Amino acid sequence: MLAIKEITLDLRPRYRELTQGNEVSYYSFTNLFMSRECTYYRYVELEGGICILCLPPHKGPMCMFPLGVDNLGKAFEVLRAEFPGLECIPMTRAMTERVEKECPGLMEFSEVRDSFDYVYETEKMIRLQGKPYHSKRNFISRFVSRYDYEYVPLDQSNVEICLPMMEQWFAEHPGYISPMFNERQAMMELIHNFDR
Image (cartoon, rainbow, N blue to C red; front, side, top):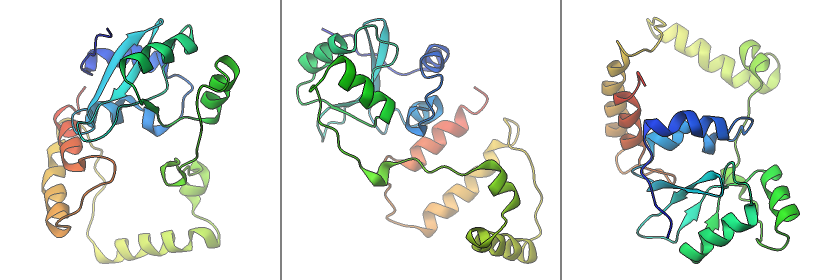
């Protein structure tokens, strides 16, 4: 039987080491940690690595791709024995290729376009040149003309200034429910652990 463990800040160094080169936001430790309670994230150690599990009471078990495992086929065998009907989400093309190479026919893959990461190129976002960025330039111009503002870097000494704005946003959007997780709970977790 697998030992299911809580996700704590102590896991961060090992987790970051295992996810190096994986640029999927879903696998970010910050995202994982701040939403761990409202998404029912836990983890197990197996085959020399770890696997993040999502065990919601109202839905079947899910997992992220096992990280740092020596034997991928054995890892999935152990996971599926423990969690029948287990789904593995989300996976990059490199992950699906590894599964097909090491465990052909083990899984069926389907793309969920709404779950894809979106990527902005840094230089393009800095310059905002050309027609594709016209609306963003207009948005900035409206903001600058309407508000007296100051840029202040966010750090542990002032992170709580976010709370009134967050509460105002939720008050102005009653009934808002994220399809992913409890955003208010995750943001509070982030604010209260900002220094770490």
